[in-house]
Length: 83
Image 1: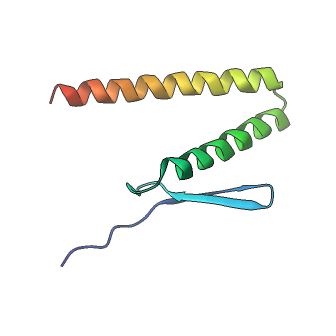
Image 2: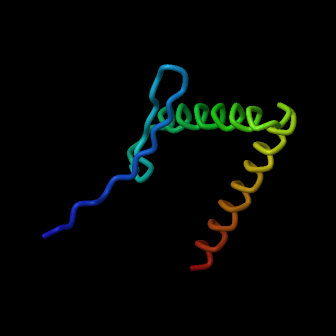
């Protein structure tokens, strides 16, 4: 008997709207993922500014996070190519 997979869903409330995707859903559309991404980034920037960062500092941290994520992805891809 095959064991049922547990789905991991992330929900972000942005304004009066809930946006959610299942993180381990290989069928999630690019539009769904980008919508979730935009909401998450907006929430992160708002939270950083609320905690006392300037908008420019918050944006700098977000940009650094993108660069780190791209490096992580590139490293994962290069490791997988050697297998």
